[in-house]
Length: 454
Image (tube, rainbow, N blue to C red; front, side, top):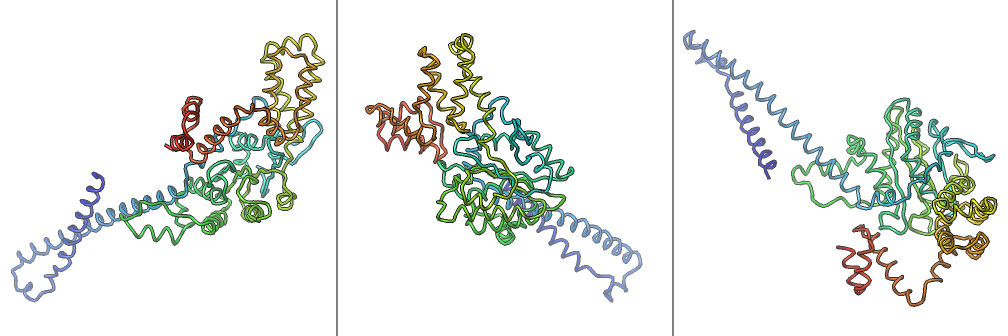
């Protein structure tokens, strides 16, 4: 309220100054015939007064211009804020924040281009060159999101990008799809809103050029800017991102990181994924623009990105998985004892575990829990091998196996827990803790959902 009253006071002061200025303009006594009939002293006094009024008029004009300029800047800033607030949505960064950080001493190889005889297109070379697309593909659960988070947040990536830009400005933006999240987290609209928000938040001066008509219309509203956010259509967002990438120059380069293209809503048959892939391909073809993408190795993505630089993740993570498994197992005192008694058998067991994982990091993470449970039950190495031997190697089949082993009496409660987590994630309200789950499981379904959305 105080700032609004101050603004009204400034406007009133400006009107008073304008009124005075207009009155001064009417003073032209020196051209009046009656002025010549006055004595010289009076004429001199009047001329001095006119000179003083002219000087005051100049000061008034400068004050009005300064006040108007300040008001214009405030209005433009308010308009920019409206657009940024409308582009942002609550779950924008949720998936990125929930992706597991890379285990210690894993994924460091990604800045090289050869490992254990396997070669791939150098990410480092791509980051420092004018390459358009870098496509990382891999099976579900192979660690694509963890790798993308590692690359996006690593200081080496920024250093290499700065080499590419030769010290000039770089606009970097990210997006992580999540097909189990909110509508925005799994939609093309969410992707484009996020990239535009992160990019334009770095260069607010570009907003009026990216949304020229909408920005001018909202600015013309002045102090009557709407409280409601702007509703964005997919065509408007695509046009805006196209305009933004066309503005890339040698002095303003752009690099986008997009994870999980396959998790965008829609089916392969609907053409949505193909349209999104084609659009990303188009904007990355503009000079000084590049995009690092990840997805499952779907045929349609192979058609679009197959000739671009990239890597196949499950072919390169065996060493990382060995580091992860070894660290987890050696943390267990019982496994340490087994290793001291028969180190060869333990090494062979780890090899069998990695062979069955087929490069899928999530499979290893899930199965290790069962292995450690067996170790705590004093199972022998052969017993542990039998334990993993009965588990399916396919990730979806493994989930089905896990659910099939839930006791029939616990099935209803397990279904309730899954539903509560789904509602919590999709509404982006609060994380379901053990205490929350305990309360919700004793409630009716409607009560639990209601409390999750509070």
